[in-house]
Image (cartoon, rainbow over all chains, first blue to last red; front, top):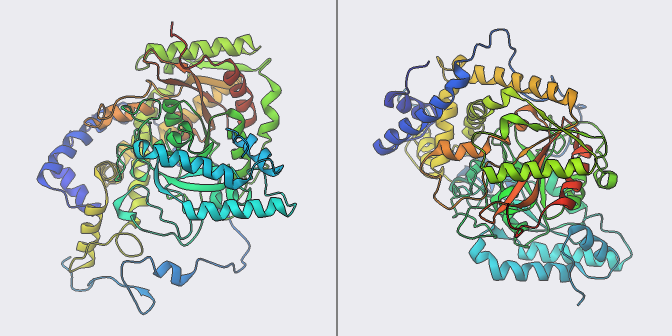
Length: 100
Length: 484
């Protein structure tokens, strides 16, 4: 049995997922996600020693195509949908000098 | 003007022969949308201009003696997570509001090439996460059979559009039941094909190892028609199966004589409403009467499907939805640094359920919890695959309810996410195994709302599945027949 999900766990996960949660949301998600994880204990508590994982329904390894140039999506059309563009590139706010 | 036929097969035949024009067919459906979609809210966008142009092109082809294809002039609704070039595609999320994709999904190209007339983009639970469409950022869709009830989800708009007669056929996507459950709740046919049978190129990803596109229709034959049109290998989806498309329409008249059908015991007891279970038993009797050998079968690992799914699907979603960072498309909320902009954008752009799933998935994948949750869930997935293999050694098809209940009222399950997730217990195991399954309307529940029964088949077993579906369709009690 895993330890019950805490408010601190939820705050840490929100940070990893780049979501700013309010105090009320933190509390509510701790409760709701805890209930889902409690339900998942039926899986977490199973002894599955020796059972291989299935990540995908098809037995695919690598799918290759011929190395032939094909037309991609139109660059201007793609850039026209971006929130901010400069010099035919996506523009973002400062990255360097951020707090670690 | 001739009477407009109601099914896709009839419409295509009438348009191809010149009996009715694609324009007349379109006008008829647009008028119905105009009159009723204010209340139903099946559509996020009705593509009036594009549809008129497509219908005119079809009529020009017919006039010139050319054949527009098997879906000639058939109005078709597209779930709003399928990319349409230059036409807004939102996933019913604020974060993608106003975005116009720079390409068409493969299925969109294929239905257009087959002569269909795309008439609009349908509402869904945001990013296909939900079972009621109540999670849409643009308001819920209402069930055309009773507007105080949900249409199911996540493809609730596509199911409601067909049930309301806005289009004879539509496309949805099914990750854990998102085609079959709304089909059942709205009283229409819905099919989740074998994973890899239909290209996912241009389907906005939710959980990539589970997502599959499939048809909705009022008749089994129309789903066969539409699935034949969209299936087949596509080099732009590396998970696309390179195998011939089965002839589904041809299989419809073949009956079920001698087929072995297993009633899954784990999905007939606890948690299934008695009136729904009774309809499934009645469907089993109908298959027996048609010559099938019906028995009971146990799929023990199916009991763990829900837990495994609600670890695997959110884990994949948390990774897939990392792309919504305010940089390349969609919404941006400005902030001094990129990291702050990313978080501000995602916080403002995603709704409650999407945040919850991202959080759940991030947690299940995070250091210290990966082995206990995600790792275990992947192993349970193996057990489910093995249990299905055992069941299919003795049976050609399996039979279960599609949804544990008929359509519920708005707000009934929104406060408790787990109660909403429990809607998916019958549909999830097939997604985890990658198998095909479909929901066929089979009479009503004690509340008079539609009941769907679910047929399951092994991978690429669609032809056999459609044979049984046609038998069930012919034997189905009327919706208003008194429940006994």
